[in-house]
Amino acid sequence: MGVAVIVGTAKGAAVLKSGDRKTWDMSFELRGWPVTASARDDGGRTYVAVNSPNFGVALFASDDFASWKQLESAPRYRPEDRGNPEHHRLVAKMDFEGKLKGGGRFVDQIWTLHPAHGALYAGVSEAGLFLSRDRGESWQPVDGFNEQPGRENWAPGFGGLGLHTILTDAKNPDRMWVGISAAGFFRTDDAGTTWTRKDESVHGFGGNCVHHVANDPENASVLYRQEHFGVYRSNDGGDTWQVWEDGLPVAEMSTGHRCSFGFPLVHDRKSGASFVVPLDGDAFRFPRGGQLAVYRSTDGKTWHPLTDGLPANCFAGVLRGSMAGDQMDPGGLYFGTTAGAIYASDDLGESWREIASGLPRIMSVEAYAT
Amino acid sequence: MTVHVQLPPLLRGAMDGERWLEAEGATICEALRDVAQQHASLALHLFDEQGQVRHNIVCLHGGAVVRARDMHMHRVQQGDELVLTNALAGG
Picture (tube, each protein chain N blue to C red):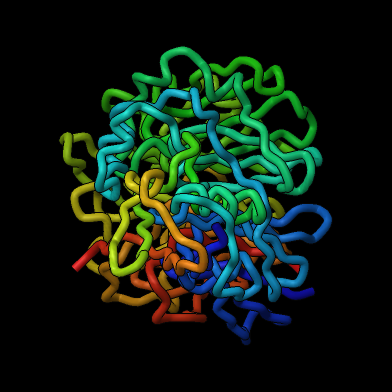
C-alpha cells in the first residue's frame, strides 16, 4: 500500500507519492494558487481548496492526484448575510476600495475540508460551516451554525475568523464539533441545528483561540486540543477539559500566562499516540533554541520529544493544518514548515527525514493511504 | 457587441488553458457577466457574493486601466479586447 501526501503551499500543491514511505516522487500542481486544504472521500476523490486575494475561493477535484478539474461551485455566503466588523478590519488589507467595510459577508478562505457520513463539509473564513452532498457540485450553508446569535461579536484571531477544525462521530451522525479562531470550540448534538460552546476551564483571553483539535471518529468523545494557551484533553466530548502538558516545553506567553504553545495536533488512531510541535511561545513562534522537535504522547498523560532527523537550526513555524498522519500501521507522520520543508516519519515519529525542501510557505498537509 | 476577453494566467486552468473568450455586452461589466453565465467556474472568480466584480480585478481596455468599481459604466465597441488582470500589489 502506498501513500500520497498533499502539501498546500502559498503557490501551489506539492503532491508527494511513495510506495514504501522511504523514497518519494513529487509533482507540483495548481501552480500559482494558494492551496489551503485538502481531503479525500470514501470514493477515492481528492478535493483541494484554493484561494486568491484577487480571484476568490474555489475547489479542484482529482481521481488520480494528477489531473485536476475545478468544480463549478464553492461555499459562498448569501448577498444578504452580514459580516463581522473585526474580521473585515483584519482581512481588508487587500481591499483597496474599502468594500468589505460595507458589511457583507464573504468566504475568503477554505480552512478545512472534512468528509463524513456521505457528505463533504467545509470550514471557511469568515467563520462558517458548509455542506455538500454531491461531491462538491453544490454547497449549502449550515444555517444553524452560521446564523447563530452573537457571531457579530466573535473575536477574530490574527488571521481573521477562521473555522479550521471539523470533527465528527462515526457512531453518531448528529454529533459534531467545530473550532474557530478565536471564537472557541462548539458542539452540536442535533445534526447542526443548535450549537454549544465547549471551552469550560480552557484558558482564554477574551474568547478562546483554539488552534487545532483531533479525535478518533470511532471513539469520538475523547478530544485532543492544542489551544493558543496550552494543550488539553477531554474524555467527555468537550464538557470538561484537563491540562495535558506533562513533559512539554512551557513558555511565558505575551499575557504572562505560562503554557505550551503550538498549532497542529495529530492523533494516530491505531496506536493511540498524539503528536504536537511546540513553539517557543506566542511572541517567537519558532522551536525553542532552533531545535525542531515533535512531541509524542503514547499514554495520554506524558509527552516525550522526538528529534532524530530534525534540524537543530530551524527558526520556522508549523501551522495548524500543516501536520497529518496516514493512519497506516505503523503510523506515518508528515509536517511542513513555513520555510517550505517537509519532514516524514514512517515509525510513529521515532525518526524523521526531510522529503522535500525549497517549497513556498506550507499551509496544509494531508496524507492518504492509496 | 462582441468583445474578446483575455483571462489572467491563473484563471486559464479553469478553462483548460484557454486564453481568450468571446463575450457579449455593452459595458465591461456586462461582458464579464456574460462570461460568468457561459462558464460557471469563472463566475466564482470574477464576482463576489454581493454580485459585484471582485474588487482587485482590473481591466486593460484601449489603453485605459479600468477598476472594478467603474466597469459598469465603461462602454465597449464591437471587437474590443479586454485584458483581465489583478491590481498590482506588493513591492
